[in-house]
Image 1 (cartoon, helix red, strand yellow):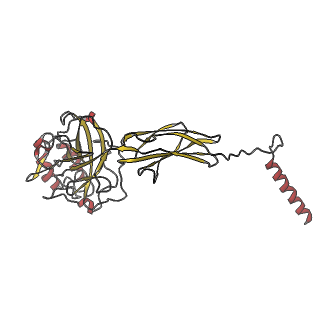
Image 2: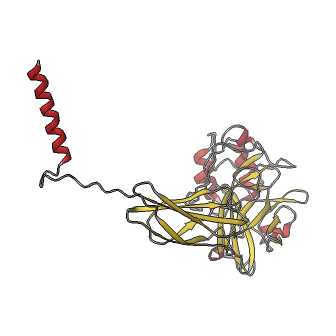
Length: 360
C-alpha cells in the first residue's frame, strides 16, 4: 500500500513538472499578462453634425493597446443625448473608421460611443462630446383597393382569418423588392394587407421614371385607407434629402399601381397625399384609377401577375390556375380568401384592358 502511494506521488510530480516546463529548453513557460486599459481618442461624430437616417454614418476613432485582438471595437448609439445607449455595431476591426447603418429615427439628441476591449478584458470608451442630428420626414398616404372596398372602407377578411403573411410579399419577379420587413404577429385588426410604397424624386410625375426612385418600403394598409408602419399605427418615415419634388407610388400584389399626379404636400418634415379624393389625384386621371364609389377613387383590381396591366395573362395564368383554391392568393382579386367566379366576373372582366400610368 505504501509503495502504491509513493508511485502515485512520483507520477503526479512528473506530470506537474512536464506541464510547468518548456519541453524543448526545460525552462518555465512565460505567461503574458496585461493590466493596462486600452487608449481611445478622436471619436467622430463629435457633436453638431447632421445626417439623414437613410444614409450611412461615418464613425471614426483612434484606439491603441499592446494586446488588442483582431476585432476589438463596439459602437453604440444614443437617441436621447447619452442617457441610454443601444448597440449599433460590434466586433469591428480596429481600422479607425467604419460606415454604419443608422436606425430609423428622427432626433436632434444623437450621440455615439465607441468601446475598445483588449484580449484580457480591459476596456476604454469615448462618446461624442455633444449631440448631433438625424434628419428625416414622415409620410402620410391614403389609398383604397377596389377589390376589398365595401362602400365605406375595405374588408379585413384576410386579416381576421389569419391569411396575411408575417413577411412582406413583394420579393417576386414583378417587383423584386428585397426588403426584410416582417412582424411576429399582424399588429392591428384593421389591417387589410401589405402594400409597397415607393418614393420618387423628380420634376414632375410624368418624368418620375424608375431612375428617380430614392426609397422603397413595405407597409400595412388599414381599412380606412391609411398606410402605416410595421406597428400598424405609426406613419411611414424616410431619411433621404429631396432634390426636386417628391412623388409616391403605391403597389399592391393584385391591383394596378398608381403614382401621385402632383408632388406630395409638405409641411415641415411631414409629407401627405390622398389618392382617393378625386380623378386627378393620380397620373393619368380616369385612366390611372377607378371611381369605386361616388367621389371615391381606388386602384384597379385584377392585376394578378403584378405587371401593371389587367389583361388575359392575369386571367389565364393566375386566376385559372388558382380557381377553386383558398388562401393568400394573387387570383383572389376581391381579397375574400377564395379564388372563384366572383373574382373574374366582378373584378377582372370590368377592368380588362386597363393599365397603370406609373412611368417606367
